[in-house]
Image (tube, rainbow, N blue to C red; front, side, top):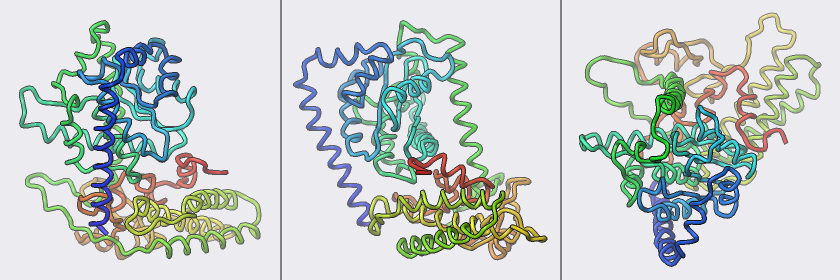
Length: 443
């Protein structure tokens, strides 16, 4: 399986390389006036019009001497995506919010161009990754942060004059992650490879070179600090889920070795469909009330997930891993909905259904367990997992085959909505959270 996956990924990279070479020939033949026309897009409407014609716009101010070459590399990747991707690395068009202007431009472009992923940066801000009507843009942005951090750590030995990832490199990194699909991630070696492409590396003080007409001010520095702070907060919140790595002083303990959980997509989908059908029948007989309303929400979420599983991927296929994660989600959603209906009229109400955090396929949690090294943080757990953690052993966690050459890791260390909610272990209203993040949900 892993060999096939590696060959497919290598094939995609080779195809991208060939496309980039062919594109460079076109660029060399392109009249300078054509590139200048795109560089002259200065208003939001002009930028939107340029993106409608071509979804990748890299203006000279971000090109690091090779704006069109960088754009063609990104363009070759964007063309492979099943979701729309718009890339705008442009001079500030004016009229944007003082705080997070790149995010504001992405929102304005979305109103003009429609749903998709938006990778946007203006000259007085940092690059922002936004999305509407597409899978999990928040996780994509977090994965981008990880990839950039990998490059930064790899270049630490270059001080002084340390290199950093330029916006064109970030845009290519994000685009490739979208094409590769959920859960969003990139092998650090690939991120470093992208960062070292011609025109993608720059001195550490890159942002001071962006636009001489807009010198850095205390206000603009505050904007950048605010955006970085928001990103850091999101990463910090997600770190609370990393329950298997206790905080210790001194030398770091060896990383745990995780075995991939044996799962079959067809079996999971069949179980999820059966459980969702049972939930539908139970709902038809249930008395109206808050339990029925919540159960109906779980059914809507399960149906939404199952719609994406109508055409199962082949084992080892690009979508197989994400469909495995979704199939588990659909099954647990249906189980939670049926459990919610079962609360009606009970004197010993067990409360909302919370699965075992470590593996939701273990069923309802029987109690909670302290997260190792995380103070007062507790997570729901089944009896065997709670006993393992309490005795300092590794719990029997749900581990999917990770779509890269990195070692497998528990699902809750991934960048997915399933990880953030713990498949319902961490979120009482996770069906609502899920519906808000999935395109087409509720239809």
